[in-house]
Amino acid sequence: MMHPDRLFPVDPATRAIARSLYQNVRDLPIVSPHGHTDPRWFALNEPFADPATLFVVPDHYVFRMLMSQGNRLEDLGVPRRDGGAVETDGRKIWRIFCENWKLFRGTPSRMWLTHAFETLFGITEAPSAVNADRLYDLIDDRLKQPEFRPRALFERMNIEVIATTESPLDDLRHHAAIRASGWKGRVITAYRPDPVVDPEARGFLDALAAFAAIADVDIGTFDGYLEAHRRRRAFFKSMGATSTDHGHPTAATADLPKPEAEALWAKVRRGEATAAEAELFRAQMLTEMVRMSLDDGLVVQIHPGAFRNHNAGVFEAFGPDKGGDIPTRTDYVRALKPLLDRFGNERGLSVILFTLDETAYSRELAPLAGHYPLLKLGPAWWFHDSPEGMRRYREQVTETAGFYNTVGFNDDTRAFPSIPARHDVSRRIDCGFLAELVVTHRLEEGEAHDLARELAHDLATAAYRL
Image 1: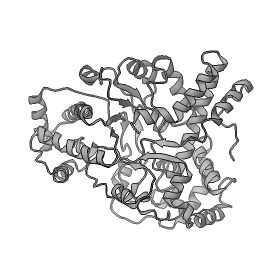
Image 2: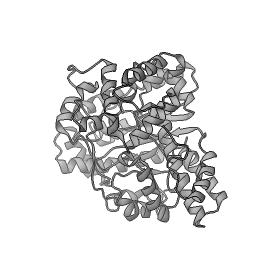
Image 3: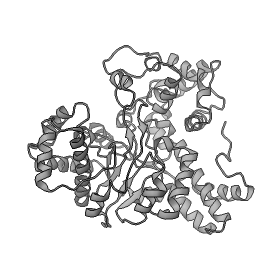
């Protein structure tokens, strides 16, 4: 199913160089500095329940495509908010997936799934209605074996370190259990404060109350609220965190005078903020998070530009992260100006910018990162985590920001088996891009070999302080 030269340039001379570069990086350990795998898997190390639970139910790339062709999320086993009935027979879910395999033709999901099937389970035939039950039984039998438990797969995948992402309200018990187990796999957390930073988030006021309780701080004042963040950040850092993560609707930042920030906080904590005031509060909190990072050293990631939960019916029935987030146009030049006026020339900290608006790469993001010491560019993200998206990213960013104002690759996934596949795609695309620079005499081949390793491993390790 997988051709050894997949994704390499077509020109024979360029392809030969790409092959050579790839051979030197293909087996490097995986650094996964940002993602959404469940730490419970590694804490409990229990077998994955069945093929559908591993490949279909947790992967919004998979079930959003199936849903787009009329399949019900209930029939795909996606849990409902209200605990209502959904399909629990993994075999039935798997059959729907296999019967609709053609829907993934030409998509990144097809590459990731194919890679996992072949490298983990030895499957070299395409799923179909005919072989669905046989493939299910094959994978299900393997999942019952010790070498297919989460920790064993982690080691087999050659993962050096993986970061999960947790809310400030999480007690990180699973991370504590991993540490206490004596297992040597490195699983760290990242601080994602959105539930207590976004006044428009569902359950925000209840989350604030829980936040005050878990931090053991009176958050009646803005200073108290900020102190609660400092305490939770310190706890997350003690559990291995090296970064924070912020999924705001826009990249807006603000730097309000203290009396204005206090007055805004008073409205926010009472649930009285307007939509404009909610946006201003999120903007202020990005600046506050960077200010805190100057003290505790946590790297800041900003993931803006998604219209979250666009499908209101799906959100109400199934909750967030169900494939209904849609990219939007995003401004960075004006949005980041207040933050950069205050901290842009800091050299001891990195703020990593992501985008779903590719038009911003060459116009805004690369010029900003190519100037301000504070800024680095995250890799092609989410809808653009694809061969074409990765190529566009390198083409639009490198001429202005170079390679060293970028941070390598991260997979940003809940789909555990797809992690090696995603990193392999990134390494192949980067090796092809570097090979083209070599054959057009813009890069020496020795430099390309150095860069291939840095893009595959070293830049992420350095940027995320791993």
